[in-house]
Image 1: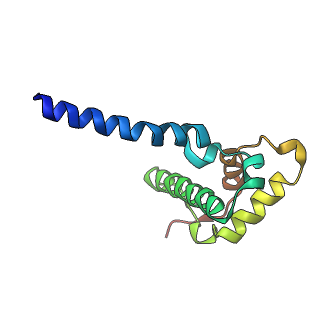
Image 2: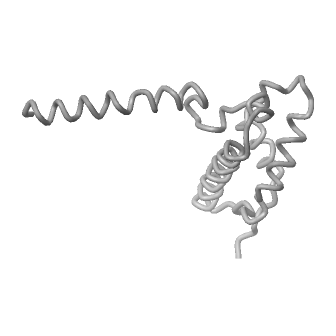
Length: 119
């Protein structure tokens, strides 16, 4: 590999490192699913939308996995921001749940979420 290409790669890695560290410090390995009720209580509207987006993406992946296994899919059209906000606010209402993670809340939601029967 020539020196110029190596230098370009190193500069790119150096520039990306702070972004990666910031994301890891804020959300950890699993993204916004690692955010807690304490984080939610202090989050602004844009940060809450990021959590909703993560939840919908995770649920979509779960639904695709179910479809691949010939199981009924999740009724994702019912997974609105208002619904998720209500569920998060309910789960986070108890101060004892301040360290509850969004991923745990979503798994509880999906455990009883309506399914779309195969047609």
